[in-house]
Image 1 (cartoon, rainbow, N blue to C red):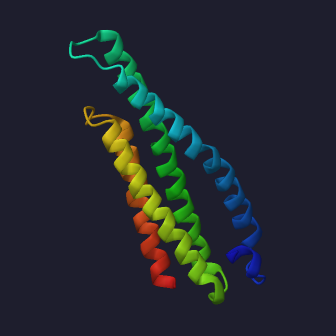
Image 2 (image 1 turned 90 degrees about the vertical axis):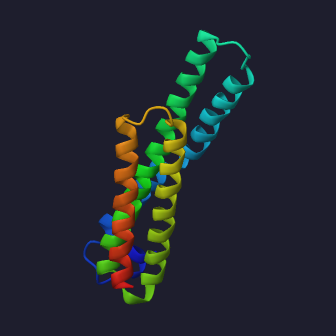
Length: 151
């Protein structure tokens, strides 16, 4: 909306194109994330009181995949927040509230996705995906702060 209603803004078309690309990138992630976590739950249901190497491997594989998807969501959300910060600095003042809303939602999504990555990788503190998710959440928070300064 910010790009569509800011006719004087030379970069509006580029921002609109980036927003469409982000929407296409994010849309399939929610369903894939739900499916990945369903695999985790299925692996947990197969739990037995005795240690089972095959079950542990299946659970580890499922948790690994379940961590990848919220990481992708966190990184996409950070990109949305960054795009919002860029738009907030240049769009028409009348639509800065929408930009602020987009940045707020993106920042919340990034932080929520970070928590899911942390939960799914609870036993893998050194995993670089944790650092990537934390960096994405921090970037989204910084972008939100920039938007708040312009709103």
